[in-house]
Length: 178
Image (cartoon, rainbow, N blue to C red):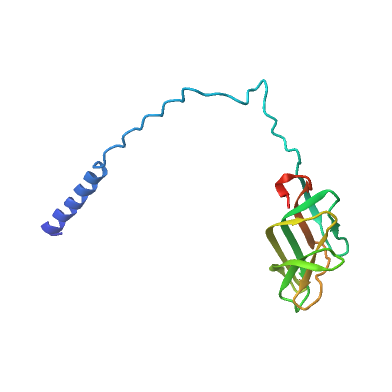
């Protein structure tokens, strides 16, 4: 190793050690002074009531075409999540789920694609989840229909499901006023 290389190496090492101690330590910031006039308006002896006048009732609904769910009178149904799984036999490769409301008219509200989860020689299981915020009025019927891309409705095998998750809330609640 020549003298020039050793000198450069020692200079690089010296700069590295010097750089580590070069930065000054941070200056501490003093804590702010506590407020002088604090008024408690919710004392433990007389607390403010915090319960909702119109509580939300969580629901998990199995909503199939053969057994649609009807929103009870005096309530609105707020759907937040839709989940569907379906088994499709060959040659189907794609599957979808469609949310229907008002079963008298079969009015489709929205459709979402289902992803393949597991394949075998018997068929492919597809599944999907959709986050939404759908508000349905009292006496509205709702269900999810699953279809495979060959036009056949998905089977109702063991593992197939269609579920709606959300909550029921009174029609008198101001939080969902029309």
